[in-house]
Length: 147
Image (cartoon, rainbow, N blue to C red):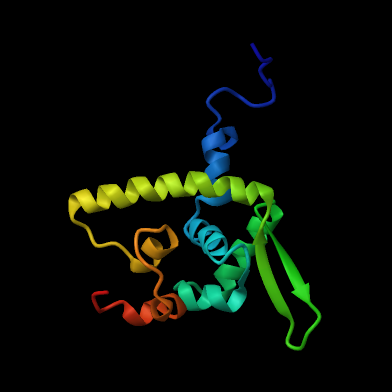
């Protein structure tokens, strides 16, 4: 049996692996960001995130910084004018993708069972729908129409 760390009181949920997982990659936007990078063959630019997700630039930048600090993504900055920045998954980030896919699969099947509508962009990212570049480029333009 592993020796218990006496510095963390028993029942201290802030030191629980579930809490760690939720902080690192299960916040409001991080699953979408990680999945978008994976779907784009491990390379996504800031402007593509802002076109595909209804997220402010400030919140996106904050989430990208946190993912980078946690070792989930890394960025490559090209010395161009204006600077081009690409985001990539690390090995740790790639290992998270399987967990996110399982969560998505469970949610997709449960939503189908309940007859709930499902976002077509997410279905494309996860292989439940054929890729449609018109939706991929600006999915929120299609919000009020059936696809």
